[in-house]
Image (cartoon, rainbow, N blue to C red; front, side):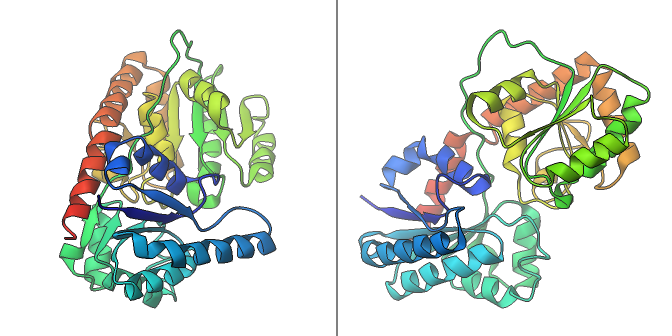
Length: 346
C-alpha cells in the first residue's frame, strides 16, 4: 500500500487548510493512501509555536522515510518558510513531493521579495496543486514553472448533516476573518445604503479580526441595531447561522478559493461575491450567483437588493449552490482527482 504524509498546520487551527484536509479525511483517498496528518504549526504563543515546530520537524525526520509521497500544504510567507525545511528533507530522502498552494494573494507570495523561495519549491516539486486557472497561469508564465507540473484542484465542500424545519430569517451573512482584504467595510457601507430604503433585514458578521473597527463604522452609520458581530463561531452555532441566513456575501479583494463560499454552497445559500482567485472559474455572474468588482459598493447594493426583493431569485441561486456542492465541489469527486494526481507521480 502506498503511503502519503500530509504536512500542514494543526487540525485545531481555524481557516481553510485544516478544513480542506478534514474534508478529504472522509473520502476513500485517505484510506487508500494510508494518510497521516503531521501538524507543523499551532496558534499559541511565539515560544510555544517554536517548540511545536521543532517537535514536528524531528518527528518528520524520523517518519518520512516510511512514506512514498510527501504532500505539503503551504500558503503565505511564514507558512512557506516553515515548510521549506520539510521540503528539503523530503527531497534528500528522494520522496515524491506534492506542494499544495493555498495563498490568497499573489502580491504577498509569488510576486513578493520571497518569490525566489516559492520558485525553488515549485520548480523542485513533482507536482504543485493550485486552486484556480489564474494561479496556474501565474506559476507557468511569471515563475516559469513547467505547465505539466502544475495542476488545478478545487477545494472540496464540507459534508453536512442539515437539520430540518429551520426557518429562514432576513439576514445577510458574512463569514471569515474581518480584514480589509475581505472587504467587510464595503459590505457595511452597502448595507447602509440598503437600510435607508428597506428595513427588517440584518447583516451578520461571523469571524474574528477587526471587530471593533467594524462596530465603530456600524455605530457611525447608525446601524448598531441591524449589524451584528458574532466573533468566531463553529459547530452547532455556525450551522444554525448558515441555515437561518437568506444570503451569503463575501466582498473580497483577493482569495485563493475561500472555504466560506464552499460552506455557503453546502448550506444552499445564494452567493454574492467578487471575481477574484478561483471564484470566476466557478461562478458566472447571473448564473450560479452574483459577482461584482471589489470596492464597487453601488453594484454590491443593487445585487443584494435584487436578492432581498425576490424569493424566487434566492431559490434559484440556492439550488445552484446545492448543485455545485454535490458535483463540482463534492469531496468524493475531488478525492478521485487527487488520487489520479498521486498515480501520475509513478
